[in-house]
Amino acid sequence: MRGAAGNSSWARRVVQAVLGLGVALTAQAEVRIAVGMQPGSLPIFVAEAQGYFAAEGVAVRRLDCAFGRICLRMALDGQAQLATVADLPIVLAAHAGQRFGVLATISTNRNDTKIVTRRGSGITRAADLAGRTVGLHVGTTAQFALDTLLVLDGVDPARVRTVDLQPGEGRERLLARTIDAAALFEPYAYEAARALGPDALVLGTGRIYTQTWNLVAAGGPAAAPAPAEIDALLRALDRACAWIQRRPAEAKALLRERTGVDAGLVEAGWAALDYEVRLDQSLLTLLEGQSRWAVRQGAVPPGMPNFLGHLQTAPLRRVRPGGVAIAE
Image 1 (cartoon, rainbow, N blue to C red):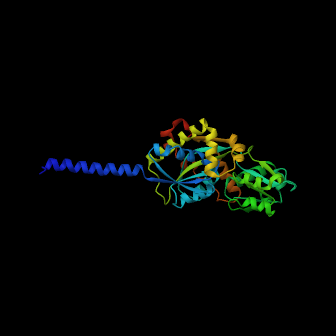
Image 2: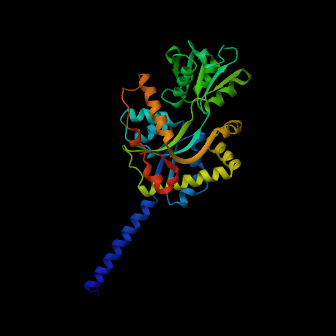
Image 3: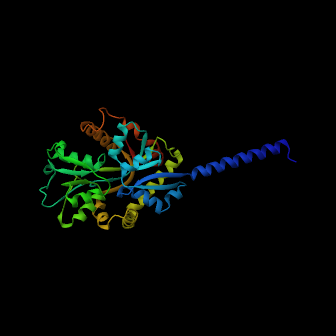
C-alpha cells in the first residue's frame, strides 16, 4: 500500500503525463491555411511537399482558393486561421475594421497584372482604354494596377467602364467580345491570352507596381495558431524559399503540379518572381499608398488605418531577425 509521499509522487507523475500529452496534442494541432492557387503560394507548396512543416512539428491543412481576396475572406469568416493574400485586399480589410495581422511577405511579383485585349481593337496603350469596357476582379491588385497605369498615362480612371469578373471569366468575356479588354493577374492573364491566340495583345504593368504575396493571421472567429506554431510555420517557409532558390527546375515543376498552370506561364513569369520570407518598409509604404488610392476612388471612407499595427513583426524577428526591415 502506498504512503502519503508515494501517492503524492504518483499524482505528480499523472499530472505531468497529462500535461505532456496536452502539449503534444497542441504541437500537432491542425493549422488551417487558405492558400491562393497562384505562383506566390509556392513556398507553402514546397514546405508541404518537402516535409518542412512536419519537421518543424506543425500539421497544416491547406484550403485551396482561387485568389487572395477569397482566401482572406475565408480566414476572416473563421473557415481558416491563416490566408495568403496580396496587398490590396489587406488595405480594404483594414479600412473595414477587420482584425488580422500580417506575419510575413513570402513572395513578390514584379509583373503579375497584365491588360489583355484583342489585336485590331484599337487598344495599344493604357490611354486607349478611355471610353472602353474593361473586365477585372474588383477589390484586387488588378484594379489598383489598372488605375495607376491609367493615371500615369493621363487618363481619369472614371472614363473607363469596368465589369466585375468571376474567377476565369475574363477569358470567356474576351472571346465573346462583351468586354474590350481585361485587367488580369496570373494565371488568368496568361490563360486569356492563350485562348485568344494570335489575336491576343498583352500590355504589362511591371513598370508601375510590384505585387506582394503575404501570410496573414485572422483575429476573428477562428482561433489564431499558437505563437510556437506560427514560429514553426515561418521557419518551414524560410526553408522552402531557400530550397526554391537552390532548385528552381524542381520548384517550377511543383508549381505546375499544384496549381495546374501551363509550363509556358511558369517559364515566362519566373524571372519576375522573388521568394523570400520578410517584412519590409516597402510593404508599409505600398499599403499606405493603396489606402490613399482607395479613398480617392470612394471605395472606402476617408482616413488612414494604422497599417503598422497590422504588421506582426515579433514572430519573424524571433525566427529570422534579418528578414524584418521596418521602422517601428
